[in-house]
Length: 259
Image 1 (tube, rainbow, N blue to C red):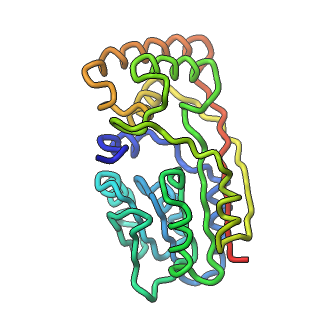
Image 2: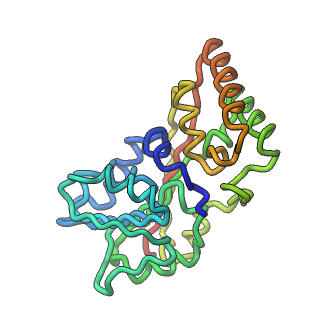
């Protein structure tokens, strides 16, 4: 069972998109290439390739969760690109021997991967001047505002103090900076960017977002789901009425290239 079982429709509908400033930075890495090829690992519902539409001509989407991959296929259908969907882990992805990606993106997924294995395997499937872009922005679990703190406390009341990572699993925090991980790989020429984003949430979008996550997916609550949602809606309604549900997030993009 995946840590994201049941979450795909909520993920497609409620996960925040990629900031335009970050997309511009990423697109700049393949500017001027005639037919740039993108490899998106741990793609989820295809947010990154969708945001890069018009900048890329060849896309390989790699996602181990079949439902997530299905959502990505729907989102990317009709784009004027050569699109291939792969229902496999990043560690197991094996393209043809001649395949070379110009850009590899990993968004909100690198912490789930065997990072050294993935980076090692990318050596043989990327162009000499290819860029690796690892990106992410935390979550409402890690956000630090009055309303997100209260919401996290409510989740913990139902699921326990430790952050969950799917049914029967605990989250293992990744505290090592990605710049260090990339710096020890073949893609050791590292460049880091941080984009500050203000998000305005509503009660509805917060609830949908929670159900898209591994720490508050619906199956985790069992027969207490309705009770949790009722209390979460009441809590969020109070904070929304008192001043809104704003979140200030830092979206980080770490690039790596061969040194």
